[in-house]
Length: 419
Image (spheres, rainbow, N blue to C red):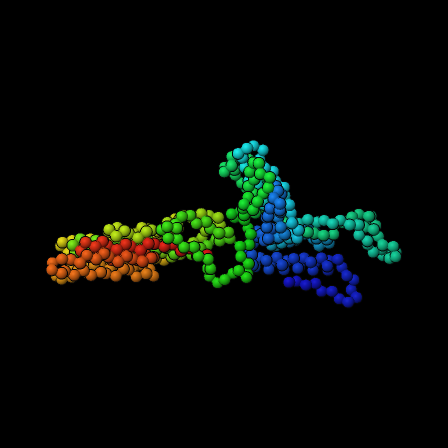
């Protein structure tokens, strides 16, 4: 940080004091830029309802950092300085806004709370000046004119509420943010309500709030969302998250049925892993393939939106009077433009001997082994009927059945999202 040098006995200049203030502001701006970057960032500014509830909301103390220049106009005796700088506006007190409900039944309205950095010269005073001709009688204002001069250059958070158009409840639209303003909150107000509650206050999906602070940061990822066939659906990207690590397994193939002999093993599902860019508030469709059912069906594919997918393993072939069934020749594969994949292992073929039948083992998936083979023996010309073993999650193949036994189910797929 630049510093000003003064000497004993020298005449103090107003620029000495002003330059120190400007240098401190520049140093803080560059420190903030090193940690936050140059995008607009908001911190604090919590939006809360009143208690008891009313149509008034409170925006708490907080700050906004916004990219601009050092000084657009002269700062006292210092000239304007157009060098770029990340500046910090601070509100120490709460701000209140009173909203209005729609006037027509069945309607609702969305309000947008937006913020921006405001620089303002204020606090005008008529200052005493030194009178060199008669020091005992100071001047009032510059040149003894009595003119008031601003004494503070404030950098604060400017807040405003922008009303949308009243519409039928459920169809009302949120207005867009104005140029140079950051969207912070959406407030939904319905006809006939007399009070706003926390349920009516929603953080804007792309609001520029600080997502994490230093004590909250840990190396790597530390949040995990897990999806199986029964929990698949839409996943909403949390605020502040712009990249995720995704791991995907397809479902394992089922083993083949015995059909008097022994069935082949089902193949394991494919695997894909990668890092992907996402947007806060975005809803991404997560599909998780089930394992193949124990009657010779293939496993289902899994996917994370259109970013990545992993195919299911194929089913093992059924046995027959002419011998054991063949194992699924290949497992599932992954697909994406980035990351890496591991194909599922092929299922094993069955063995049909003169006195025993051994089904094909299930193929493995990344991180999980396939189901073990089962054995049936001929006793006085009969066959011991044994069902195949089921594969395990994530994505391993089931083994074949023996005799009249059905093939084992494939293991279900899995999708893991980390951030």
